[in-house]
Length: 261
Image (cartoon, rainbow, N blue to C red; front, top):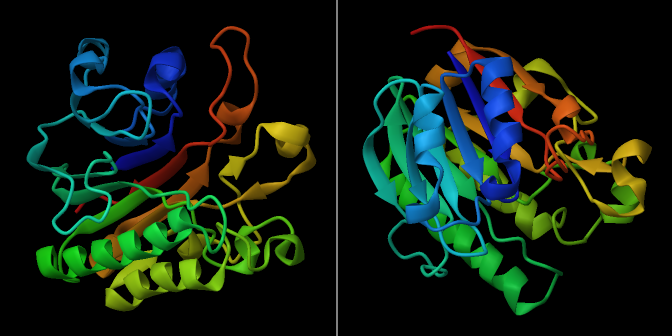
């Protein structure tokens, strides 16, 4: 089974690239973030023509998450209880391919000590509580998406430059660590100790070409998922400009490959 998670940074702008990615990788499941479109305008017909069922939890201009699957998508839940940012479309839960999925687009936080940063910390704490109430570490569960947190120094291109900053501060990292203590495994770290591989590069200052990246797009799985995980890769090619398919997202897709259950 192959699962892709990708912050598309507007599905309207990235639809040709997304369809090309489906053809190139032939994933069974895709979790998308930052779709930036209301559900009524989500391109479900285009994905159906490509062989994928889809569910969306979107809003106009901002945020938005969606799941595609070659097979049926069931047990769909949009949002989560006690969400301190309940007006924002950031969480989509479902089941597909025999796996429970949680598609995450986390609050960015903007800068340490701002109201947005404090909301981000509260949001992650509430999400962890909801996960604990809703799931079991014994489930076949993948929690994946754009976490807007680099979990450790090896996940940033320059730890000294990023230390204490938003996306890499210790309180944020502790929120990811709490999910790991609950029973999730960072699937990427099964296969590599780092540094990197990075998944996000700022559009500015030629960051991608200079290697100034962060690993903030994560795939976390319960122990039964980790035991099946045979590869986790980053499609850096998708971050490169392409005149034929338009401007890239600032994130690269992460591809998780699991042995069949």
